[in-house]
Length: 175
Length: 189
Image (cartoon, rainbow over all chains, first blue to last red; front, side):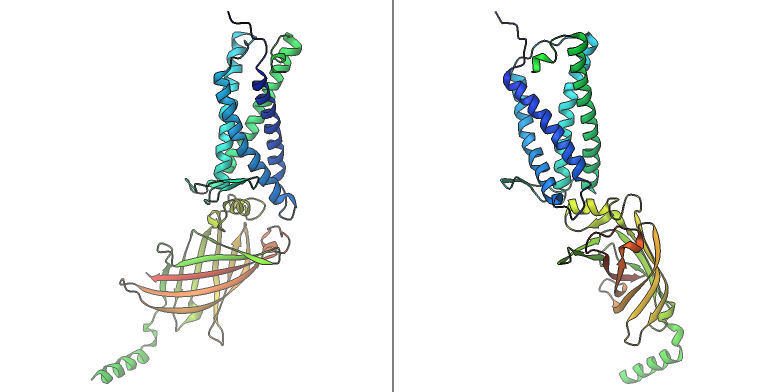
């Protein structure tokens, strides 16, 4: 006899909220650092940290997905349409995250250089697969970042709507 | 006999000085025997060197009538390569040469002068970042002759200094100018 799950597992909540902080942090850092002037003292450090955190986030998100498969989630609430839309949005967020990982990697490794992660280890580069890879991957990275932030905002608004309008368990199960 | 033949050849050459007509050449980009390189100050302490990998060009050259020479080079600015993908992306962006908007840079000569020391001054119009300005390339003739594959080649090297502000490109720190170094080897058409 399974007990009714009303909350996400602690580890799931940990993954969720840390991811939220990292995504917002990386977005803010990325938005800011692309306009840094050459002579800014952050010109080298900001991209270095952005890439380091981003690459660690790949491992983190992979672990999160494995945990998601192993754990049980509490039931979704809302209309059939809302449930479908929410599931689709969740899947899309994961797809966008991995698109960000891949496009980011392809910018920095287009010349075959690896990426230093916090001067701790280096992720090797594989060089270019297409002409002007750094530029195209850069465009994908930029537009997908805006899309991801847009979708994440919608996701947060939906949670708030459930909490304050429907007064259901949607937000509370993640707190 | 040999001497006689050479003498008659010489006489013939002197009798018909116009027989050596200006010849048209196509820059050998296919075999990559031509280079459009640049050098920009880094912090004032050193230089960044890079090049444009895609360009084409033609020139006409006649050793006996230098003034009639002409040269045109078109460069695909998106092919900028400084051996660092992230830097290339930044240099191609609208912070610098805005390569997606101004994808062609070119030089079209207007007047070629031979200097007393044998070097050439090639005046022309340089277009970069959508701005066309007069520029003079200090060039020298390197050599010409038959190649081992049945063709005829001539080669030049030229340098010029461009003030980036002249072309509407923002000056960053010590890098107010760019030195271009152009090596062109042409195959006679």
